[in-house]
Image (cartoon, rainbow over all chains, first blue to last red; front, side):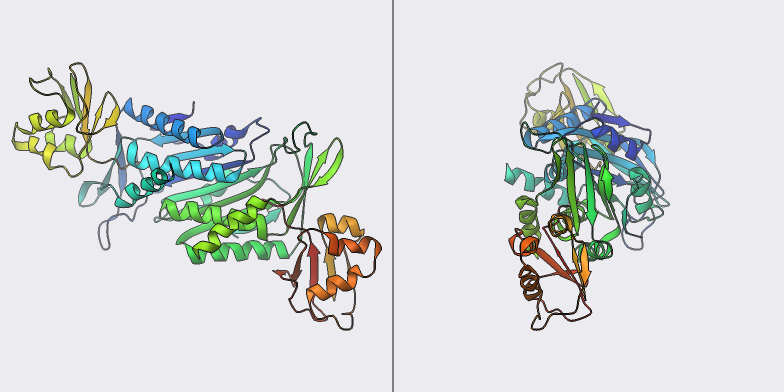
Length: 155
Length: 155
Length: 82
Length: 82
């Protein structure tokens, strides 16, 4: 299964290895791990003590599968794995994992970054940060919309 | 130590985790694994049975350190790890690993790809493939020189 | 039809969703949003949330997208996963 | 000075390197390459290897780079790691 939405953590090394196991053509795996930062509330602000990921069950998996399908249509890929955690996570914990196997590195890098850029703006997850001053919903970043624009211009 | 040149394999998951351990600012790790392909000799040609990586001891480590220093000068990075194996490797085995930790994903992705592109053309490694028809030195790829040009235009 | 609310919008409305019949004269996601906001009070969050997004049957769509009875419609703020 | 050969060039020359005094009149990596190639036979590989590269004291340089006695100079084909 190429896409998982789960509360549980995952084994990055095992996931990367599984993506190319037994595939003689696989020469490259690009991957990404996103982590909970604890310094996210502006200068002098309270530190983040935990983060809760809310999602839209059902749509989430479908959105991620759509993104993977788009990536497979643009590049020559041998394997793709996307894992996104939901629920309450502590600073330093893994949130998201994307890995892409390909014959050559440029396809693997491009597809991995494309999937992350699309996931950031198209997959229905929302982050709520716990701080000593209470919970706050993370604002969407303008830079994430801009990152998506890059891929659309290249289409 | 951020750069290693070694015969031994390495633990991808442990290396990625170690890069951000205890760093509250680390939100992103982009990484790359390069593998020995067994289908490399042109259509109808013999399959690759093994690959031997020769290098220039002393210069290799220095070249890799220089590449990492260049990457740190261009992007805001929290950690970088480069491992390149030497000696005889079998199809499917890992050859190279690059991982970059940063606050944000675009710096991590860009620096990881930059390091791989520079490594491919600047670090003194040479691949010799074993096939049933004998050994052959792998030719340098024009596309690797072209990939480097992209970063130089952006300077 | 089923209407769902997520994240800060869910909190503002104090509801994660509701079952309802498609209101008369409502044929688009935008018209449904305006119909719900017309309840006033907390429901104004539907027109006051910056860059509100919507989905029909679990696909993100614009506010000109058609809605029919039996659809699952969701409203939510911009996503922030990853 | 020390001169090193790697990969296909090492195989062609049948030597991984040699200690030598800086030859008279040789002041650059290009001149050293030509001096060695002038030995003839297998040594012609130094001028016949496509896109030959060189390094002085473990830094990759061009064929106009200066060489002095005591330097470590290396000649090799384009690198193919990664």
